[in-house]
Length: 165
Image (cartoon, rainbow, N blue to C red; front, side):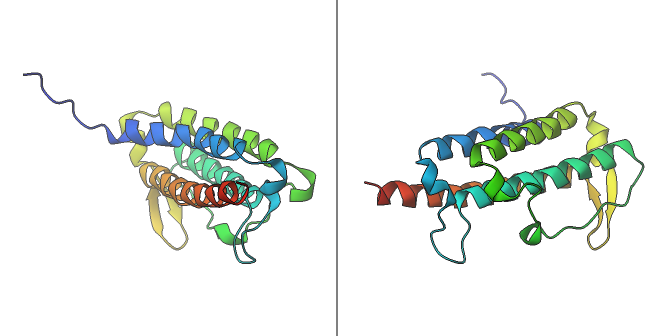
């Protein structure tokens, strides 16, 4: 009987982070472009708003990871993801342009994480409210954020697909 391979949480996490952009894009490809701006209700985001939010959060996550990896216990900024303004106004871009930007930022984060030695995952940054945050904690937060919004995007895309039938 062959031994069961040991579960490698970091490899799994890197794989999950790497696949998010593709998962988002595959959901969006199934929609008509005019549906990407529609909000299902006044208090919910449209697809383009979701992708914009994911892109802006990714920009901050990459900055956070780079600071923690390159500096010794740096101070890292707090941010409220729900109140971040998009770098590019939504009327001047498309969901697919934002997806390209998200994909590039995510590759940057994944390559950085992939390059780390095991001990580097324990490097810390000092968050003003949460205290010390490790690279591992930031990567897990990214994954949890991805999962929440992938679910939201899937639900939104499924509703639009059902409405168009």
